[in-house]
Length: 298
Image (cartoon, rainbow, N blue to C red):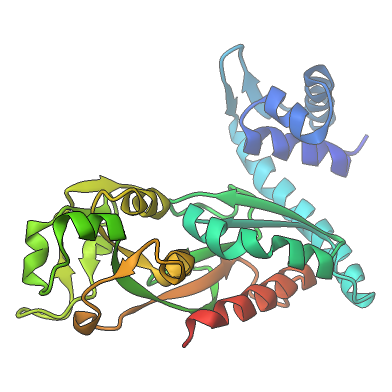
């Protein structure tokens, strides 16, 4: 008896979700049904794929080998279905998108309703992560990455750029005054990132160059956290325009030292594994979001 595609999908889902119970919830089955499927698959293959205890699961060597091939088979099946959809010119299927929380909240979520109206047969799955993820392990179709890309085997499509601004709330500036020079920033509360260090290089011209390294008074791992701190009057921050343009327009945040800004713009890329013809649902999303990001090009 040969293994079936649904059994492969259950096996891969168990590994990617981390537990039988999580996999059961994801596929809409009971944990006992998932366990029976795994046992049936192992019986057909004549080997143990997962060593299971009450506390953990570990892939056997055979399981690791089988997982890689199972993913390839499922991806090929999905690609075949997508190609059939392309023939009908109807983008459809699940589209898994990953982005850092600020970009997801400010540059994707506001346009979801419009995108769904245009492409009702695409099922969006939106995941946020402020760290770089492994697209394969996270079953992600496309990830949006901000900043300079490291060398990678991933295919990257430029979507646009976004300027960086030095910002503070009116309340903070009213209480502490507005810095008139770059050197004066050392007298203020500065909000910065815990990681990566390059994010604490602000695009400001000064005596030693056009980027100023700051030592944060308060630091956070997420740009959205820093935005909220700035809105709450906790200090001066450097953030990208894509996440602060509404705050600036409505006067919640004020741009300071604009004459000293060196004009650096953060590149925005979509990254994905497929270097061949993109699935139509991915192509539609990238074209759509690139058009929305064009507002930052000016």
